[in-house]
Picture 1 (cartoon, rainbow, N blue to C red):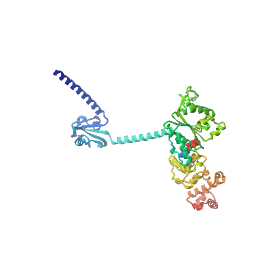
Picture 2: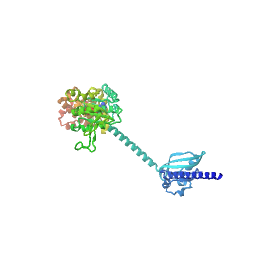
Picture 3: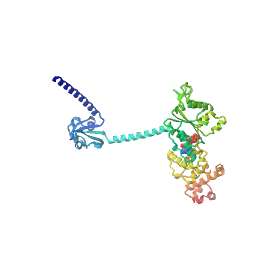
Picture 4: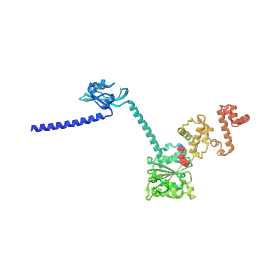
Length: 473
Ligand SMILES: Nc1ncnc2c1ncn2[C@@H]1O[C@H](COP(=O)(O)OP(=O)(O)OP(=O)(O)O)[C@@H](O)[C@H]1O
């Protein structure tokens, strides 16, 4: 009986020993293959183990260093100190072989007493850490750049907050846009050219539940009639000469789970209007040359600066499509009907232009602002942006002045129709030129007369006429 239990004990012991050996081998392998340098000492600092990474780095042999005190092998080590204090030292900078290392020193405690100290050199040099962290920063920058580009390509760049304007008409339009954004209704945006219809379409998409989906813009006026169907609905491979291999997705499919913005919808030919109506009612598209219709989940926003109602009356626009599109109609008022927004817009656009062009301007002087406020802006916000861009490049000083603005903008003062008068335009040009040369020569009369190529008497006559002597002389 005793013999049997002795055998069993021995067998258990053997199994436990084998298990221990296996574990030790695993630990050894992990220890040796570690990228960091690892050293283990006893509480006094005598090295008991050291891995290959560390000895290779130190340029010593393992056998040479085992049993030696850590201070004899490793510069600036504190393993023996941690052995005494029993307190871990983490992420400490330790200079070894002329480089700054990051070191961890961890005491191993048993029954409250230090039995060993494990030291780890995490990076071979702090510079590596710096390099790594600057690489991470670089990658973060790249990531945010690509995120931004992605959002731009998805068209989700503008929100209602980016639409400048605090006039009651503009606030009303923004409020309607905010309300319709939440639903999936088709929206028609009307308004003169350059009033910000596209901006509103973007903002509605951004405020809708489709914001993570694509925003696809189609300029109906820019697509040749014969290509329109394949551009909007796509085509199958081999449908026509020049067709891309594998076919091509149409704009509707591209906008799946997002928004399609049909700009200048008034320019859509009648044949295409019928096809568009079908897509809107069936929610599926038929690709050119395709057999089966494709289901699409798309919200439609359409815009036009033309009076669609009039077009319906004249038989140029389908009545049924008109009603489909006019579920909600949003009208963006022209700038001349919300003059309160002009100065805010001008300042906003100038800031935007400074960022875009890199040309700096301090601001717009009161005279120039006065001209902007009086002008009728037939081209609306887009025209204002063009006028300011031109002024930004023309200006010699730091602010935008009236004489940097086009004649028809400045000439608009003092009467609605004045800018149509040739005499007024010529006079304005004369005045601007004299003023500019006068400033350029710092008020040097002789030089001004010479540069303008006029007589002395002619000069005084014009200076008086335009009231320039009192102002500048
Ligand atoms: N309220 C606004 N705030 C800031 N920028 C604006 C505003 N309205 C228009 N813009 C800017 O003016 C320019 C023209 O706007 P947008 O293209 O949206 O006009 P649109 O009505 O769609 O013109 P079109 O009918 O010619 O297509 C753009 O650069 C746009 O960013």
